[in-house]
Length: 592
Image (tube, rainbow, N blue to C red):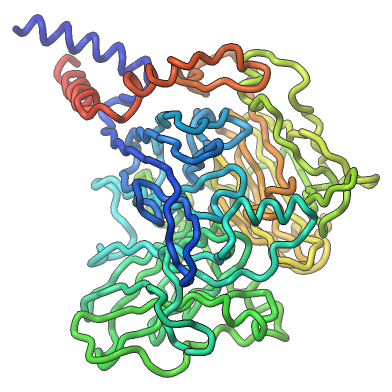
C-alpha cells in the first residue's frame, strides 16, 4: 500500500510540475466561471448584461499571497472572450494575462483554464472581459489577495471586508456602443452610475424613477470595515464618498499607503482603493453612499450619479437630506491633482514580503530608457476615427505577439515604438516598445486631450513620481518624488497635464500599456512592452501552457479536442483532480 502511495505521489508530482501548479507548498485555489448573457434592469430598463455563474457583477476571487490559482472559463457568449486580471502581475507568465497581445481568444462554447500564481502580491484588484468593449456590459468582479498570516498588516484587522464596484453605465450594451464608435460617433453621456451592479437609491424623484433596485450595505455600529472600491466603468472618473463618514485610505492596487483621512476621493477608470471606515455615527438614519461623475459639466451630468445606502444594524430611519457634496473645485483644477499627490507609499509597512515596502529604493536607480507617450483628441486615419498614442493607433494582430515570438512568426508586429511622439501624420500600426530586461524605464504620459485619461501597465506596479499641468520637460524631473511615490498599476493623467512613472523591467513577457477608457482603448490608444531575457533560461519565464490556444498564422496547430483535454487535465472541473494535487503538495513535504 505504501509503495502504491509513493508511485501515485510521484506520478502526480510529475503532472504537477508539468502544469507549474505546485510551487513548493503554496496552496492553490480553484474557480469555475460560466460567462453568459442574462437580462437585468440596473437602471430600470431591461437590457442584456454579461454575467458570471448567472451573477452580475461576478463573484469575488479571494486568495492569499503566493496561492496558485486555476480559473476555468466556459464561454457561453456569442463572441470571443478573454478575461484579464487587472493588477495581477503574472510573474514570469504573460501567457495568463488574458489580453490579445498574449492570448488567443476563447471561442464561443469553448472552455479554457487560466493557471497562475499570485506571486509576492497583496491588495485589491479586479477582473474583467478584455475584448470588444465587453466590460461595458459587465463580466467584472473583485480580486482580493490577502496577506499571509506571518506578514502583519499595518492596521488593526477590520471587522469585515466589503467590495464596492462603481462605474458609469449605459442602457445600450457593448455591441451597440461598439457600433457607435465604428460609425464615427461619440458614446455620449452615460445613463447612470452603478454600485455593485445596481442603480441609484431614489434620493430625487425627478432624477431617479421608481422601481430601481439599489445597493444596501449593512454594518454594525462602532466597528471598522475595509471597503475595497474599484472603478470598473467605461470612461468616467467618479468621486466616492459616504455621508458623514471619513474614508481612511490604507491601500491601493497592492501597495499600503500612508494612512490619511478623506471626506471624498476621486477614483479614475480602472483604479482600486482600500478605505478603513469606522461606523461612528448615530443610528438615527441610514447614510448615503455616493459615486458621482467628475471632470464633466456636473450640472448637466447629475443623472450620472450612483447612490447606495449604508445601514447600521440598529438604524431607525431612511437616509435624508441632500447628497453629501462633491468637491467644489470647478474653478480650481489643482484640487484633485493635489489630492492625488497626497497619496503616498507606506515605506515602513511590509507588503507581500517581510521586508518593508520602502526597502526598494526606486529613486536611486539609474534610468536606462525614457519614453514620452502623448495622447491627443481623436483623429481620422484612412477615413476612420482613431485614438492614438504618440501618433500611432495600435491594431491587434491576428497572431498574438507572445505566440509569434514563441513560434518565430515573422511580420506580426514592429519593434519600433518611438521614444518621442511622431511629428508626421498619425498611422495605424502594430508597433511595440522594446523594453530592456532588468532595465529601469521612465515613462511620461502626456495628455493633450480635454478628457481625463487613466493608463494601466500589465505585469508591473509602477512608481508614480510626478504629475503637473502643462507640457513635461526635462526640468520637470526636479519635481519628482523619489522616496514614497505610490506603487500601483493604474495612474490618472489630467487633461492638459502629464504624469511620470518609473518601472523596473524585471518581469519577462509581453505587457499591455493602455488607456483604461474603453472607447479610446477600443479605438487604438495602447501598445505593448516586450521584455526578453537575452539568456536562454527557464528561470525568468514559464514555458508555454500545455493548453495554449492557437489562432492567426498558427491556427493550423489548434485541434478541437485540445480544449476538452485541457479542461479534463489542467482545468478546474474535477474537484477530485485538485484534491489529488493538494495531496501531492502534502506528500512532497513528507518525501522531502
